[in-house]
Each structure stands twice: as structure tokens, then as C-alpha cells.
Image (tube, rainbow, N blue to C red):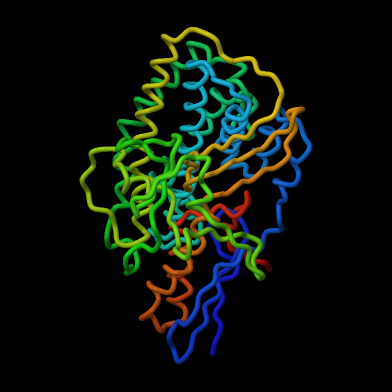
Length: 414
């Protein structure tokens, strides 16, 4: 038996590696191993007042900080019986969309696009004046701008609080965003076309895992009260454990989630399979690499939806935040983070302090499917360099968020 390693995994958010076990020139086993230290956020929040929690848990991830803060707010609002004003809901959604645009643009243009142009990092196409790389980074910056206007700053937003929001964007800010969004909607189609090319990807088999997403009743959505699975099962957010059973493994610091013994897939591809975010009819590329194209479709939808929200907010008046009193309760939020289902669950004591917390992230849900996909797609491959390269591209297609750091560059030392 020989053991091949892809270590570290490059052009993903965080630190991890892939181990491939080869017996008689055939892949026999594959493991995705997470090297990040345990974060311990679920223990960190115990005993703290509910009002402290959103600011703490958004530090789980800088790239996903908006959706973490929003998930915490929504779960705690459910626990406290708080209904937020409609105007606040629109501002929150604008911040959420900014996070999706920023994250998808980061993944597609900084992490995946170099594979399409045979580069080690996005710096090479940028240095060569590649317009797609340049526009992709500009789109990422625009996503950050949306988060700044709606959330107060580009990462770790301060405007989203239990009960609603603290501040409304000014009319001139919303008007400027509308103009920018109209410009992006005119430019976005050529930016996503490369990710639909069938010849840009390695050979791939069927995508592993039962699909799981927030239910939109046939409509594309990022928010909702229920989880739906491709085996036709559906549960309310409070019953998320019926679909997501976590297991801790001895040689990795990330838990794995399954439904029974079956792997799960969450993220852009799963969302698009339940409900298309647009009318584009171009076929997806093969296998899990379709997730990249699905993110492209979601970019278009997110820009369109953000434009609509800006228009609504310019005409909207009313309260921004609902009052609440500390007290006992439990609440669960299921929401679509850029990479898939994110769960926040909290239980509060009589003083409104956290007595229990549970957070499940998309990469924990996808990790079993990643390993199954490696085994399926590399089953007939015997060339070791190709194995390593293809394994990295398979994992990259899932857009795993291992932590907030990104390894992009090869450093040549004298």
C-alpha cells in the first residue's frame, strides 16, 4: 500500500489535507483531514447573555461573518419570541446577499479560475491583465460594499442585532448601489460563462450525497423555516437533528454529518437542484464541478435580488428594531450560507443566558460526500501527479470553508 498526500490543500479557505491510499495502483481509500485547531465557540457562549452572542459567533469566519451573525440573531429571536420589523428584514437580506456575492466571487475568481488558465494563483492572470480575473475581484469588492452599507462594515457586521437592525442605509447610498447593481447585471453573464465549459473540468461521475437545502416551496431562497432533502423528507428547523447526525472522528478536528449512514450534499448545486435561481439553460459541467456553475447562477440571482431590495428600501419607512426582554426559551435558525446549510441553535435560561448551543456548518455536512466523491472520480486513475491534482480540484469544487485563512501562493526562496 502507498499513501499519497495533497498537503496542504491550496486555494481553499483554511488548513487541511487529503490522504489517498493506493493498493496495486488503484485508489482504495480517501480521507479529507482538517488540521485547524478546535474553535470551541459552542462552549465559549455558555453562560453569556443572549445579546452578546451575535458579536461572538460571527468571529467563527470572516468570510461568512454576516450569515453567522444573522443566524444567531434569528435563532435567539425565536427563543425570545421577537418579530422584527419588515424594514429591518430587508436590510438584513441585503447584507446576506452581499456576503453571498463576496464569497462566491472569492471562490470562483481567486480559487477556481486559476485552474482554468493553468495558473498557480490569481496573481498570474492579474499580472497578465486578464479582464475576467480583474472583474472577478471587483465583484468581490462590490459584495463587501453591500455588506458595509447594510451591515456597518465589510466583515463582522455591527448593524445586525437581536430585534432587527440599528441603522438604515441613506437614500443616496441605496441609489448608488442601484446604479452599481445595474452595471453588474449588464456585465455578469460573460463573467460566469467560463464555469459552464464542459472541457474545463476533469472527468467526473455522479455527485455523491443526498441533497439538503432550506425549503422555498418551489422558489429559490436563502431563508426559511424548514429543511428539505432529496429523499423527499422535510423537517422544521427545530427538528434539524432528524436530518443531520454529527459524528466526531479521531484524526480530524471537524465533525462529519450524515442522515443515518448516508452522506449529504449542501451548497449552491443542491439549492439549484431544488429550485433554479434563473432561466439560464446552459447545461452544467460534469459531476461536482457543476457546483462552480451553480455559484455563477446564484451570483446573477443575488445581484437581481439586491437591486430589488434597494428599490424597496428607498420607499420603505417604519421601525428598525423590536424591543425584547431577556428570558427563557429555545430557538433554531436554518439558513443558506454561501457554502450551504448553516444551523444555529440556542437554549436560554430564566435570565436569558445561554445554557446550550449547537452550530453546524456546511463543510461539516459535506465532508463525507467529499471523500465519497474522491473515491468515485479517481477510481480509474493510476497516474500519481494526476491523482493529486484532480483530488485538489474535486475538494476545491465544494468550496470548503475550513477557517478564514487561504493558501494561494507558492513561495520561492533564494
